Length: 447
Image (cartoon, rainbow, N blue to C red):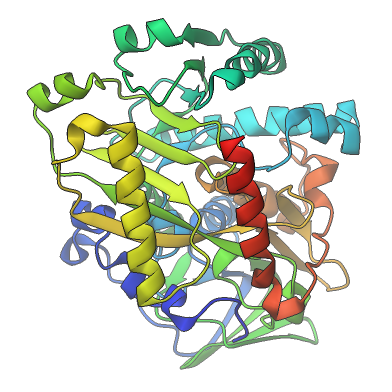
């Protein structure tokens, strides 16, 4: 496999101290078989995260014979280790930039897709009885500089018109009364679309639903080689071979540049890192003045994202790591802890026993992709949700199922999502652009 990061990024070390693993002990998870021998099917899905499982669920519901190949276990990658923010998003470009680049009409289709993506996750949770510890009414953006407050007011007006909702704006003096007291922030805007959840419980619930619908899910079965052959595709795993009429690639940030070669350079994995506190008392929450269970993020380019969970643990995440080594892991953990203490100074003595990391994927044009793999027959793929894969990954998987089945799109994909992602410069070494990019972002965040 040709992958951009050090091997540690693709092994068990980054999630040894993941809080989500504790909420669903390994002994309580289903046991999926390994792919062995020769298997034939209509559709082969490579990747057992939100995208692949969502696609497999819809394919199986339609009566198709579908096989899912997962290198580890379903939900092992980003789908089982993210911050659990089910919200609008998926593109790194601003709404105004999307309109300039792709036109107002297609941008509007994308905005509709963002909202539909959140609704799809809510529907899947309800329909399949997935208990995923849901909370938060929408998502709150907090200004980390006084100069950002005016932008929040504009964001509220535009988002209200864009999504047909009423956004709430809070000034600095209103934050404490809403349980969001921190000297770090100067104002907030809440867009009432979305909710928070336990991402691993959601992923495992999707896997259960797909299996009950008839999908055959195989764990410990990485795709080692993928090749076109007469009548379809041949996917080799360590102990088996799958022959399928159609192929769906759903590996996102954990993909390989050479499986298949079409993937080379089309996605840039970046690390996201999360710590979680011990359970806090009501007195500790009151001391800081943070009692809101809203999922929040700030206006930084290298943003922080955080939420107080129903069991009174605070989840706190950030971007910024550039390597996957023991030294880098320790360094970013220290950075996360320092930022946490600065933003929530009353919790300086609150322990954070959980810390883990994972890979999300960016595209060069900063928009998500879901569509045919150009130049390949009966092959489809989806990736690059820019840190918003809970909703958009689920949605992209459902749309891939429609495309692969050849049925009319119930919810047509925006053209901007169907465009094949352009390749990054420097090929396998494209991660070399991150240090300069991150230094620039840190400078902008200080100005």
